[in-house]
Image 1 (cartoon, rainbow, N blue to C red):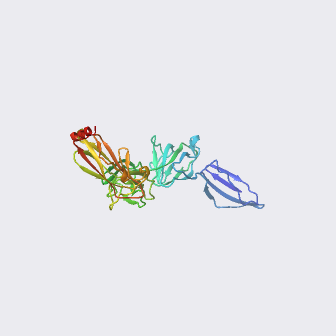
Image 2: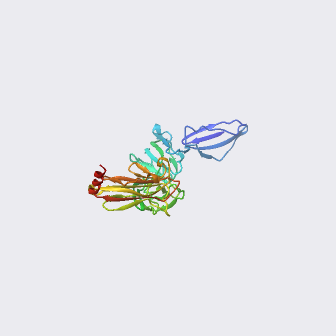
Image 3: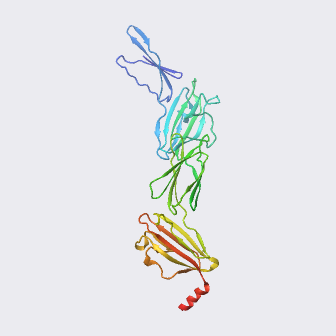
Length: 382
């Protein structure tokens, strides 16, 4: 004879002598505690009763969320009927994708617990317990990829009113970049910490490299640091790839990525004679460089530009490396104009190199033009 007790209910089942296995239907009491004893019977009478065996019926499950995945509802048994049973234990093990965190939204939580620290009936997320109403919009963010969610109710005689219902989403916990300052010789990155639960202090990992190079510099920054200056040195006009992520004790979060070019070029007002040229390293320009200069006349006067040197990778239609004055590209020595180019408005001068061949580059001379002489030249041509 098998005796089954759960809560205040008890049932007895007679089992045939040749059977040594019996299945107990527990779906009506998920997470409920069952106590079972077996008593032997023979034609001569009742035998001894076994020591009681206690177990809890299955309640909860394991789930791995895809990137940015959502669980729309996870709730206590019989929540939809607005009650829960006494002496219940459920556990859910939830895991987010690598680098993400779990954001738990409290849609409803109302448990019959009269203790200040939620010691009797509670929902526990990792090490934190909850048992009473949470303010509208309340949430909890884990500081690691996974969460163990436990629902526990204390002993009692009858069902208890209330229960809980939560939703869970996998999120990227990233710092928010507020400013990227690109100045000659440096790139400055400013950020604010990500939202967190219980004022978690995050450390940061900052990684950067100059494209297309593969070597990446990795920095570990303390929780009080919310900006960093990257010296660009001789890598002028080069494209940088930046990655910023949080660090917890368990792992590194998913990074937020930026690409930014180091500053190259400046504004020029032509009130004197000067030269602009490409940045160089050991006499050659570097790969994947972009520089821009804006040249403006002084007080509406005319100025002239003359290409002094031009040694770039030659290509059809200047598809690879080129010097451009406004929309006109130059990459071959045969392209150099015989006469100086005359302007009296703003001119955009740009230099671009690709990732293959590097040469010496260019130099461009600018100087003011005497208005009287300029018009005399025009009259002489007429």
